[in-house]
Length: 167
Image 1 (tube, helix red, strand yellow):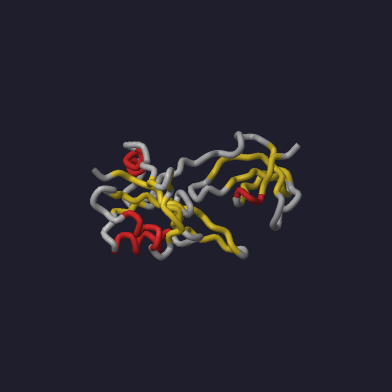
Image 2 (image 1 turned 120 degrees about the vertical axis):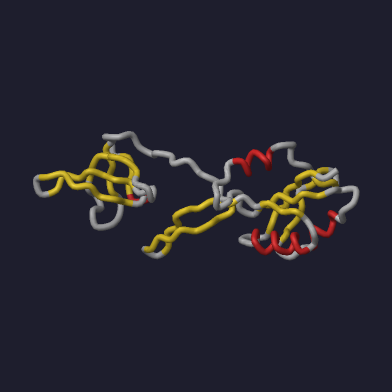
């Protein structure tokens, strides 16, 4: 009978390991999610592993050569106890898969880091050191801050990393 097991991959090699394991006939699952990634003043959308460096592999220990997993490109090792692979409890992988959307990505709920009206200090960018009030998150998960400028209130959209609670 087959079960799901956990494989620890080399850094950034989840996709390589998944492809190599699938080529060997293993069923592999690597849950992924969509995230905004900032680098050098730019932001891009990236699909990332939900559990960096970990994959789930379905193996029938009685009929499949599970030790070949450890010699697979991109794999560091299969998680074991007493020299036998440790099975993931029944239903765990299925519960993760149930959270996938139509694009087979895990939906990460928006966590609102501040309360409406909370005072925030802008820590970087053109408005650095200004203090405003948190309004809401926009659909790209940017923070909308209300700043008093030139006698009126202006909405400013900022990345989460560019603000902190004030006071």
